Amino acid sequence: MAQGQHPIYQKLEQLGITLPPVATPAAAYVPYAQSANLIFLSGHIARKDGLVWTGQFGKNISTTEGQAAARGVAIDLMGTLHAALVATGKDLSYVTRIVKLMSLVNSTGDFTEQHLVTNGASELLGEVFGNAIGAHARSAFGVAQIPLGACVEIELIAKVG
Image 1 (tube, one colour):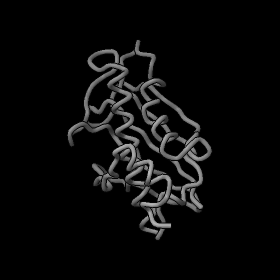
Image 2 (cartoon, rainbow, N blue to C red):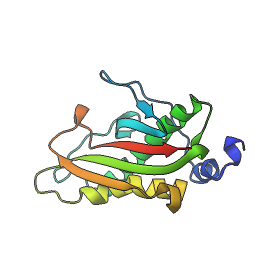
Image 3 (tube, rainbow, N blue to C red):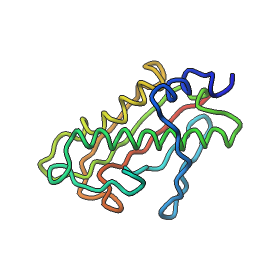
Image 4 (cartoon, rainbow, N blue to C red):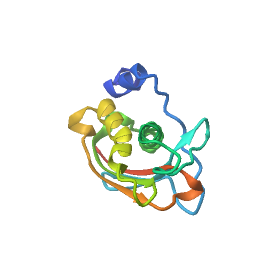
């Protein structure tokens, strides 16, 4: 089945989402690594208008803005996952499960809505992949800082067939 015909790619098109190319790593790591049928995606930071989306929750960015930032990170993660699969002759239709997300939320000590911020990514993945594949385990942590001052960083583990 051609990518454009698969329901995942149809859903992306319906949502107006174009998958971005893999970003060049900013340090000594690779964007993804595969072990058997699992693909581990390195943490992706939030971007807005092509620049790092900076801010700290509880100080100068709202939960609603954070959900949009996390949604954007999910789009970037799907772009990297797509590229990882294409490198092996596959595409997103081979994803059999989004296994886990880990979300780091740049927040003050009294901010407690990290889980709500991360919903921006989780909900989009569920919408694109459907509940059977997109429902995943998740951790959402509040941290004092993220590289480059980003407001959110998320990593993903996917199972492929």
